[in-house]
Image 1 (cartoon, one colour):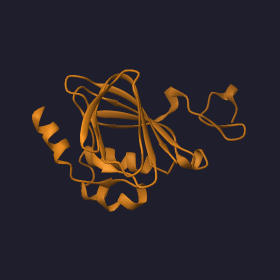
Image 2 (cartoon, helix red, strand yellow; image 1 turned 180 degrees about the horizontal axis):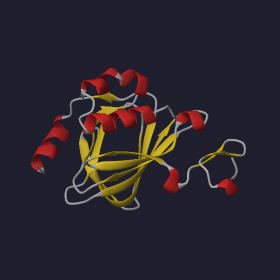
Image 3 (cartoon, one colour; image 1 turned 120 degrees about the vertical axis):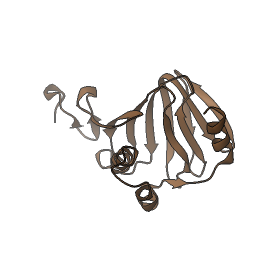
Length: 171
């Protein structure tokens, strides 16, 4: 497709364009995700989407990836993040790169919303996971479906007493 048509897709060799107003969205009660580019569109190089969380919204429980780096860029608001055994808050303009094997979790910081650009590299087809996550959050699918897909989407949930204590302290 060409830039003149204003459509999402490949522009020339290896270039991907997703217009903001034309991105597929996945919504649940606490967040909206705009899906920009999945692995199939990028030759496996990356997956990218934008998550906009309402004030205090949950993001992801403690988990890690075995193959992918997960990158976060905070466009606005504040994102509370678990990194291994430490919790920190990212603010507008902050960038974080989480390497494979590092337990992490995130949510909108207490008293704040968050608008975050997320990138996984190398990419893998994660849009199906994000769609499923929305279905689970809306009660359309049981949470057990997420555990069933951990290998497929390289999303491995772990117990984190530090994150649990953080969530309890702000409840």
